Length: 395
Ligand code: CMC
Image (cartoon, rainbow, N blue to C red; front, side, top):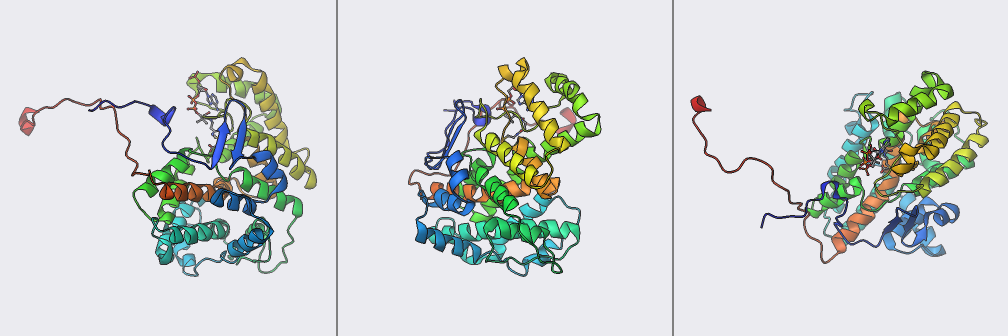
């Protein structure tokens, strides 16, 4: 013993069996439960997608009505959560706040903390999906110094979130249907992505039998990193940086920097561990980007022009072509979110909100799998061989 397959970064190790999401990275294909992401984005809303990911099938009319009602009936969070939130600095990063709030849910909802109990997992799933928008909006309002907005259950999932974000008690907030649809689509596109870093984190965490809220909080923490969910924030910061330093005229220079390995600069929103072709989500996001900018009269948005220029150069440049680096979902989602009025710091929080259903569906699948075991990677040991401890004066 002691000999294990060494696979740094799990490039070729399947850690589980899963029937939820299928990716063909060479073709640039993404399916949730067999349905192409393009068809889901076109014909379904986010809550249909949630139902599909959790249950394996799209809901029929009755199931759809019941599920929408169930989720929207649980959007309010325990009133005491406010006081927990108020312990944070107002300038705290929303992902720090969100990690804390989701983790704290296990201390608020004691009747759904046994991850081995399917009924508990079901209640925890509904609570997490229902309450994430409320928590993200609360984190935003808190940073802004504005009063928290209670959810309104007659609105759609995305519409309710928009109102909690941008409404105030002194105004009647009108949901713009184009923005509502765009946000819903962002949620659909981010809902699941098989065994990525945060999902693997959730599975590993849940495999120890910890409670579902703690496992999802671990997923939120992992998602925060700039190589994962933090890429949308990093991507927009990058575009704003180029804009501030000469804009379109300087794109070529910036791209040279990206290609120089010693610069340490990566093109954010580009490249993917699995997609070695155009990320299908990026195509849909670019389409949504066009729609939103047109609806808001922002067609001449300079960052959009920059992004298109960056993409055009990359698609023709040997460096990117040889390495099969294409735009990923985060490349355009930041521009859409910024146009909607979502601050850059909150982008990864939106991703976490949308991915929560994927995390919980994967966790449920793992816990129901008769072959599941506690996750326990081994290692290739590279340290010292056995040796004796010497007295301090002889070391
Ligand atoms: N800019 C410049 N060079 C890159 C980039 C990039 N964005 N991505 C990869 N490369 C190069 C890399 O330097 C390496 O070159 P070489 O073979 O000469 O050493 C080659 O391409 C392969 O890269 P890798 O790091 O081995 O690939 P990976 O599969 O380990 O990394 C990645 C995938 C997504 C971490 C990486 O492409 C990256 O850092 N991209 C930027 C961050 C980003 O957009 N992340 C979002 C991913 S999609 C949403 C999500 O999952 O959250």
